[in-house]
Image 1 (cartoon, rainbow, N blue to C red):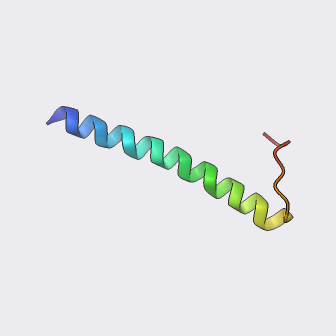
Image 2 (cartoon, rainbow, N blue to C red):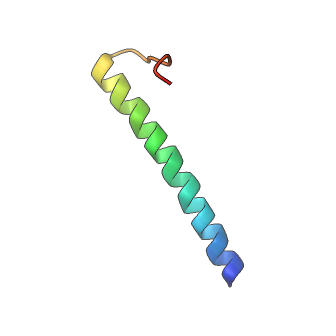
Length: 40
């Protein structure tokens, strides 16, 4: 059971990191109109 919870937690943590990155890129693209990859 602990392995299931660990896998679920790992999936949620990785998913949240990807979600934050996707939202950041979407906000930058929405504000600037161009994809700027120079800001990091």
